[in-house]
Amino acid sequence: MKVHHILFAFILFIAPFLLKGQTIDDAKKWYLEGNYTQAKPIFEAEYQVKPNNASLNQWLGVIAFTQGNYREAQKYLEFASQKNISESHLYLGQLYTKMYRFGDADKEFTKYERANRRNKDALTKLTTHKEYADKLRRLVNRTEDIQIIDSLIVSKSIFLSAYKLSASAGSLQPMSNFFRNQPNNNHVLFLNERQDKIYYPQGDSVSGNKLYTMEKLLDNFGNEKQLSESVNQNGDQAYPFVMPDGLTIYFSSTGHGSLGGYDLFVTRYNLATNSHLTPNQLNMPFNSPFNDYMMAIDEEKGIGWFASDRFQPKDSVCVYTFIPSSGVTLLESEDETYLANRAKIASIKDSWKPDTDYSTLLKRSHMAVAEQTSEKGDFMFIINDEKTYYTLSDFKNASAQSLFSQAIDLENRLKQVENDLSEKRNQIANGFNVSSLRTTILNLEKEIENIFKEIESLKSRARNEEIRNSF
Image (tube, rainbow, N blue to C red):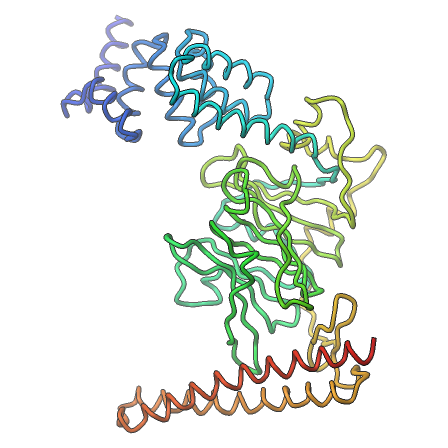
């Protein structure tokens, strides 16, 4: 009776596929075409009957690996590898590479090479994966010695809730909260402490996202600018965070030699050349073969955060809390396993210093700081890496002070023109004669553009004059 029940349950399980006329041959065809979604349920049904079939394990392993189900992929691929299924060696080698098990990856790659020694295409493909494994191995040996004091797994849709930034560090928010017409796509916007400058990604699926910035001139944000070409290269650029100096920018990119998905980078704005320096890729454990993004550092709290989806479920991300350091200190160890575990953050406790109490920092990292209302001055004007002015009296040079004062006057004029333009547009919306207003609106838009340019010119001249005559 028990056997009959099992057979009956199995028939019910595979009935949907049989009714549709789908066979294992169909699944093989879809697999070869890369149509894994359709092939997978048929392979799974067949696997229930033939769990020791090496080919089925191979196919299910590749599908799981491709879909990011690495634990499931490991089970299938290791079985297929033991049965000497050639392709399983290649995929298992890739999986071990992502796990920083480089010795095991080498063994699988060697098996694949022996099985395909006369197949030039296969050997070319293998060379690419071996080079990537060698690159990761070198980077693991340069793992940074940072103290990760906490980790929190959250849904990707609300991951910003883990970032408890002080007001002095600025703020992070979904772009859809700031730009009402933006889709809810998890893109993040950074707003600085004074709430007068924003950084955000923008682009499309063809050219990729680039990073932009806008300034608040009195009541409105405008004068959109794309960051330097050194930042906005190939791939997607996203998740910006700007340090309080206004010059140091952390961001994530799928380009710039990323290890896989998003990687974390840092750059600085060079006032002398009005451009950003070539971005530096952060060391492991900040980066990995997975998506690593949204670096934020709160100097007031002495806390930093970054997010990673390494070995996480599809809709989840782990936000790590760490102690920022003023310099880079690499781990010194001959133990490859220890380095690999620190690089992939196998355990955050491995990074803790002996006899160190992190409870105060942990409490501080979870505490939301009330928004500060006091202002440092009338404006924030960066002179160089060390100097930032907040009032006109901060200027040492009279000519520089005069130039910046003219810029402030122009900002007031800009507000008047923008209000005038808004009024004219409202008149059109309320049914006024469009043709009579069109020329006026075009002239106002042109005037706003010219005022923007003049303000930037005056500020640049003021900065140069102050540096040239006061330092």
